Image (cartoon, rainbow, N blue to C red):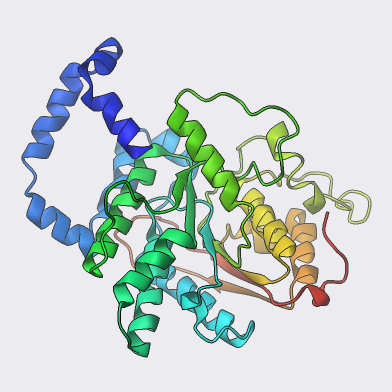
Length: 359
């Protein structure tokens, strides 16, 4: 898919009808002024992305950034969540090696530039390195290619995530070769979890159809961990038909039992919660760790969705971090970013604990 995207830009016959020749020449001139060694050095140290995608989108199209819920997640928060998941796999599910266990499949359904996937692979590497033995880098590479998955809807962060993961594996001594790629797919994570009832839509490029089909195969895997920072957008509109009433269970009883007549539960992050909850329920056990909007913990409209998750899990926790302001600047510290956001550690350890199955 990445090769196809670059081919569209690099092939004059395909680029000329779009009228982008001059713009691409300007872009190339700017990139040629970059000191590549210094840039890649910072990229490997995970310092470059926070100044790249989110600020770029803010300057390029701030409304699009808001509509798509694009916010950079500070590394401190990412590390906390991944470490928390690793600990819970060991303590609650009895998986001694945590994320490093070959049976643990991990999914970030809205992976952006790949921060959670990078941290997951780093955690796997450190666990395996601490155990000693040969071919640690090769084992990490195998894990990255076979059981650490990501979905992303936007091409730019999708490309950056592949760049980050490829550089990371190279630093561990096991670079990707030839046509190899990590399983991060350009895909809509909110659809395709059930077999299609109608013929699949034809997409503009064959490579896009290949991405969709590969992502749908991942959705059939036994996913044990789902984590990330879903996008926020309270005005995203109602769930389309393709989502098949995704959040309807979170609306049941709001009017009849609680008298709550005004509610908006089609926010993107609520949809991602439902996807994660439903998928782990299908697996039978697992761990979900998401960041949510503060409204999820305080507003009456979310009462049924919180209760739904509470009854589904043997261990359920909310961590609320209150900051000193409301800015989401990428230059702030972890305590200042995502202010007033509860962190959901929604832990399902056994299907036996459920009071009733989910629809």
